[in-house]
Length: 170
Image (cartoon, rainbow, N blue to C red; front, side, top):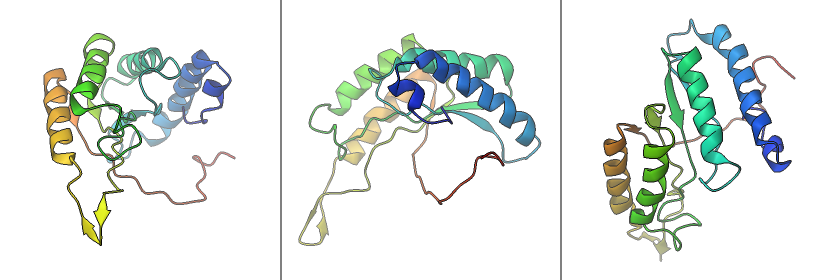
């Protein structure tokens, strides 16, 4: 959750759920009045077989739905599409199978938006020419899956500014 991965690496995945709930219980009342505050992010960024991923996501998303029903819910799992470090292990069809089962069976109806981490910022190059990297096929398969699950398919574009405080907390 927002407090980092320490709970998970120490094997306390239930504390990760509790910390995430407490975090949003502090943050939502503080920012709910802002027009740009539209949703809540399930902060666990992992593969489905890491850290009790599906159970953490299910419990956090359920908490969001029960306590903040007016807010959209979002997840950005690690999929590492065709250019990521998982590209030689999982085809787009395999990702559809893995995440399709997870989305259908474990969190159906709890997730509004999903922006998979695809690691496409490192395209294959040859003599300065950017080569085809398979993103079109990958995104096409992922979009079909998300459409079937009734989940908005977003892109994960991240920028970071450091140092950053956490809502006035030290």
